[in-house]
Image 1 (cartoon, rainbow, N blue to C red):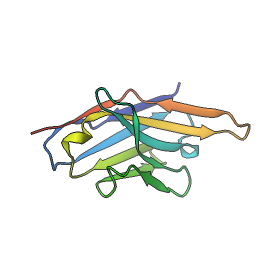
Image 2 (tube, rainbow, N blue to C red; image 1 turned 90 degrees about the horizontal axis):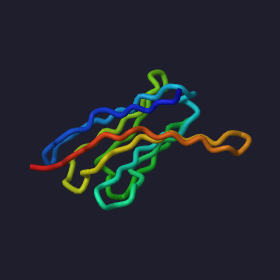
Image 3 (cartoon, helix red, strand yellow; image 1 turned 120 degrees about the horizontal axis):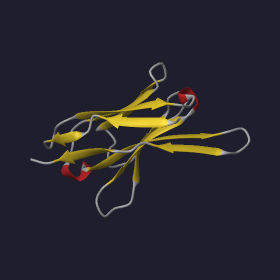
Image 4 (cartoon, helix red, strand yellow; image 1 turned 30 degrees about the horizontal axis):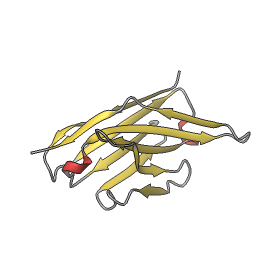
Length: 121
């Protein structure tokens, strides 16, 4: 059974930091590219950051570059999102995503249940 379980969300003041974690199980974690998405009320879900399965190449939305860092620990089947200098506009539900395309061209795409991040004074 595939599971992605996010944790680490909460309420933080502007300028503060949070570290999100996503623990994966039920699939070969090291094969999958991992990403964090977020969705604010009334807005579409957007990509925040991604990291490749091999090599650990990262990609970030312009709005979080220099403030957020995505990383992964394949030994622990976990992906992280370190968020620094948080702003009120970072308030959203953050979702973990795992994606892999098989050699046969089939896309495997899994989502976590989300964790709420609220940035407010």
